[in-house]
Length: 441
Image 1 (cartoon, helix red, strand yellow):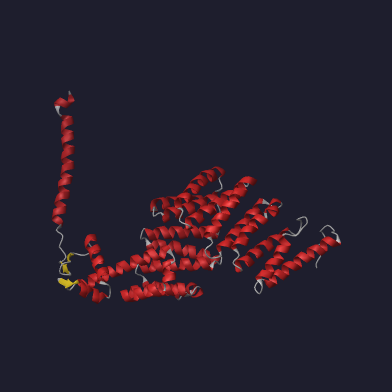
Image 2: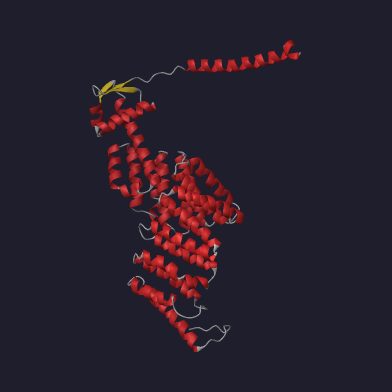
């Protein structure tokens, strides 16, 4: 082992102990894939070794991270929960910044185990109480922000908003703009989940303003662009949404985050489908980025584009059944896919009904290959929306189609002219009243 000449001399026992810790760590790394349980035991030996923390702090910190990876591989979420409590003595002897980093790492590790969001929320509550007792304000604020995001995932919107509202006031006083950006971003997501788009947009605008005053890490900037794209897509501005999604995709690709990169790539493809630019969908899929992240997720969106291009309801339904997890698992994609299907159904019904003046609903259902009840419900909706000019004769089971009425604009123009004349007359009357002798006296 190389010896640093500038380092103060140490006893043989200390050198031997350090060597043992490094060897144990190396053995643990070697066993992580083959036997994560044995590797976890070795890392625990290093982490909870007796003695003072001097030069071995870095090894212990790395051992904590590797232990988290082993417990994730073993699906031991409860042991990860206990690990935070077991490390409190270690936290007392290390810096607050390092403590915050380790706590966030452990909580994030639990998130890699499926269906553990509720457990993450519980751990945050325990950690927040510990932070209050130890007066670790900065860590508490970050954990509360994280806790609000878990409540959002659990659909506890009222509780999440209450935490965010108090946090925003507190963090603004401290002028911690980086944390403020994260909090406002969570607030925007909560309002979006509540379908309050104006408030979601306002929170996002505030987050952008705060981020412009500081250096914003690439991942956080990607999250801002992602949320901006989602809000634009909710407003049906898919061209602008695509540009935001593209920026977010580039950021995730740069930091090598394939999980989020694939999600954003799906949003990009969806934006192109919604604007009818199916040709661009194939260009993106066969491009460098599309090939890199090729898989069942991207194939699902390609199938949507194909069905939309051919305007085939049957193909659309088959695709929805085949790729149900990929298309319905994401609420953003699911909502737009449903809207796309309804729009396609409406277009197909209008195309079928166009040659007829009277036609049986059963015949229309047969032509479009859908149940009679579904066709009847959709036709009723179209008549009420004004997108179809006709009526349903439910007694005879027919659809009566009316010719498109030619709207005479002369009536509307006459009404508008009368309104304008009324305004002019009122103003002339007011001027005449002011100029009259009685008014002057």
